[in-house]
Structure formats: structure tokens, C-alpha cells
Image (cartoon, rainbow, N blue to C red; front, top):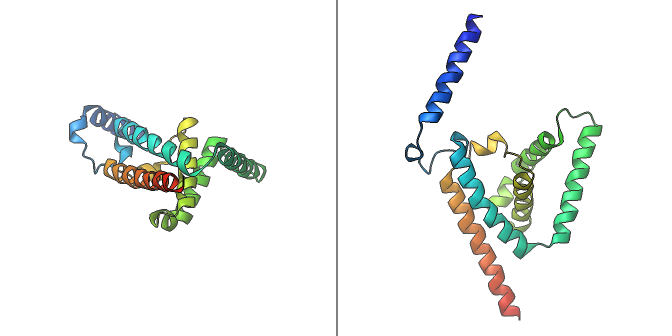
Length: 165
């Protein structure tokens, strides 16, 4: 019983601290998991950038195929006895993919970035939170860097398309 009291006090203390933390106290180097405001700010920044990238480097048909493939992978996990709902399974699949493809994304492999954008769009459009492990590693500064890199890739692609006309 005493342990529950301590747990409750700790939870209340953390909640009070979070409520008292102002946006000014949160720097751009603070993980986006720290506050809902940071998370939604990052989400908004990255959403627009991901949409631009997908529009430039993909097609609606390619995205539909990817979604169908992802649904199939989720169904397979369910059939294999994976515990959790479809969103939780997708979160685990996305985490696995991120771990396996981190180097490809850092090297700016267009295919890897396209899949990352597809995943991000699925998270946002289906109102699934990014996995906590990812939210703990990303800051607003990281988001600015991602947006700049992705936007530069989109501009290069658009310039390439204009040149070809």
C-alpha cells in the first residue's frame, strides 16, 4: 500500500511539473516526447515535408501498394499470434524498419526516405503516435534539419523535372 502511495505522489509530481513547464523552458534540443506542444509542433513540420516528398518521388498507386503490403504484414503478425492491436503492431514494424534502415536514411537513399515518409504519413493520418523510442531521440532541431534536407531533395527533383521538359 505504501508503494502505491509513493507511485501516486510521483505521478502527481511529474504531472504538476509537466503542467508548469512553459514552452520557453523547452529548448529546440529537448526531445519531442517531453511535451505535447513539442510533439505536435514536430508533427506539423514533418507532415508537410513528408507530403511534399511523397508527391515528388512517388505516386498514389505506389502508396496504395505499400499500404496494402503493410496491412498484409500486420495480418501475418496477427496470424502468428502477435499480441496487440493493429496500431501497436504497426508501431513495432516501423521501429524494426527504422533500426534496420537507419544508415540508408542517413545516406539519403531516396527509396528509404520514401518508405520513412509513407510510414510517417500512416502514423499521422491514422492518429497513431510515433513510438516513444523515436520521440525520445528526435528534437525540434532534428525536425528542422530533416525538413531542410527533404525540401532540398524535392527542389532538386523539381529542377530535374523542369530541365527534362
